[in-house]
Image 1 (tube, rainbow, N blue to C red):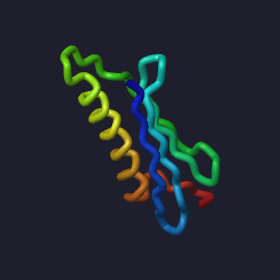
Image 2: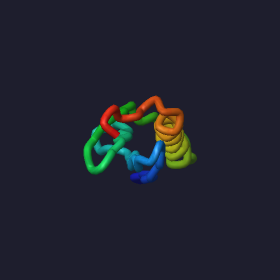
Image 3: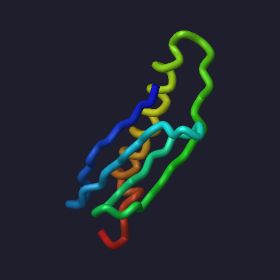
Image 4: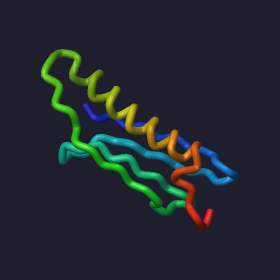
Length: 83
């Protein structure tokens, strides 16, 4: 199953769009956009769970990556210098 999250985050008057999804090549990818321009990208390998709760485990890891990037925006760590 494919999972994904999209969140708009406002920080210092600038709206950042955070998009996280599973990729067909076995990666998770989180991309941060500011005014349509990619300003940050995080990729990580998709975990390989081995039981009946596999989809739930993958969703949790994907959601955690998404949340961590949002936290970095809210802390000012990913502020764009031209925002």
